[in-house]
Length: 183
Image (cartoon, rainbow, N blue to C red; front, side, top):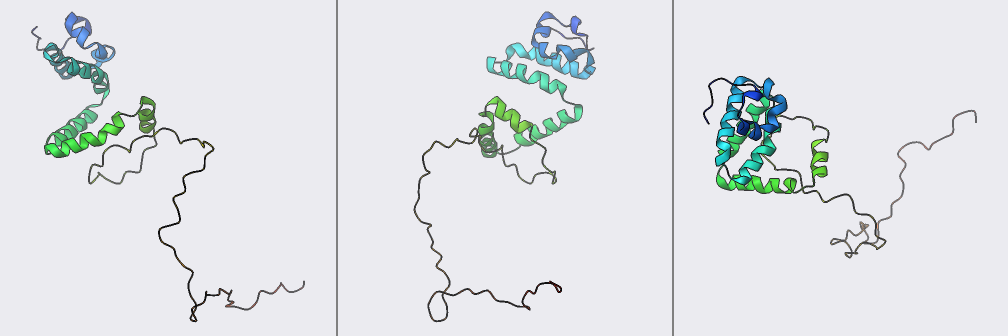
């Protein structure tokens, strides 16, 4: 299937292109011509992709099309910086993201909807996704919590000069408190 040099309207696409690019249909006529051409190029490569890659493309197509040009540029830059990392660092980052990916959809949405944190400049080091979500707090089940014994270090009370326990007595550094005059 050869594609013309000019971008077309939705109804001028081939049936195969329409099927592959169906997530973009509502926004197709508003896309810039160069973006239409890029999507059509993807539609041409699509039949040669494996089933898992085709599924991934379909899931990511609509959110990607909705990004602004600046957001797409930032995503491309982030992807390129990820690809330039050594393989062991890339694997470490993938492992850090795994707990986030395994969160139930409602927990991911809750994380996504959290209030933005104060911006303190670009991060110095990538710290991965948030810690694993363990569900809502556990309810009290009526059993006492496990007793783990006394603290590991015992802090004895201070000793006086003669070796006995120190006596704490309030000290007064000013005049005694007197009631106001006239009472």
